[in-house]
Image 1 (tube, rainbow, N blue to C red):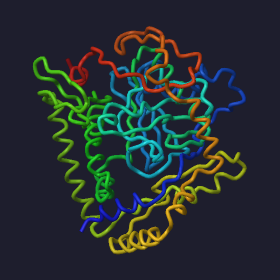
Image 2: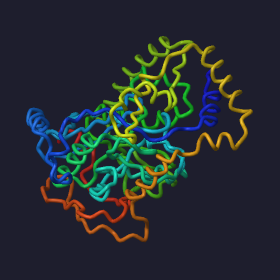
Image 3: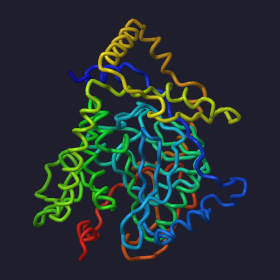
Length: 427
């Protein structure tokens, strides 16, 4: 018997801890930085771009993998295919694997998000910040709520992907240069883990598994094409690289999907990819027969990397990765542990639970700082920045010089651009 119900009950009963920090994987001396907003990329990265035939201002894409604790920057080569150019250890992310559902759940977003120049916050209290764009159309259609969800520095946050200041300086520069090169939107792909057959099999009992299967479709499209997929939402679900039939178009995110299909060449490649995946998945199921992956709590992740805080300021609180703190257990061991924890939690008075979940004075201060990164609401003045076409233009895109108190996801607008399948084909 699968243990989804037990795991789900435990998730509900467990109080989630907050947004944390990670390890330094960028090596610039911040004291030497005169203008953090215009700080050029390090020469080692520029040299690597030249080696990989990546134009300086070509488009980028960002990929996040929670379980591994990794943020990757992918960049377009001269042939329009993307390759990874930088990889960073995430200093902190809060909660557990799974998407953000509501304000205050301390979960970091999972899904597909579009970032524009307006999402860049040069005056963040967390050194520099990039708003993730949560909630997107999918999130809104499914009643998900939340705000101030960023990729930022300071290695301290709540519900965010927090980096060191050195790391976010480089990530910000990648986005800035891409926008200056004419890219209108940078795609952010946030996944619970690398969506390999073995990882999917290992997490098959997780209550979020159905959601993960849906976002895996977008993951697969990128693995096959090495180009960010065209993402749309209909019937409250993500769809990827769909060619609309006739004069059809996507309506509201909750509306029925229009007549659509996957371009034949792409469909053929995905079918081949899927066959290989199914073979690997069945092998993984056999490997994990009778086993369950125990995903650690945030406190357990923190404990593994506690020594990294020594010599740092108090705000620095790395969380570590789920792979370091998690473990594979037998179904019997897992069930017994969950039942004991649930039983131990039930007798606790409500006020005890609330007290244990209450934010510390430090967390409250962080929350106040996060308000500085808030995105403007519907009544806020619109950004005056203009953005050129993402394809075939080198028009400079102005980067906001002032922070209008908040940078939040602007409305998603439909723009005409060359269909994905024409890029992917050799026409």
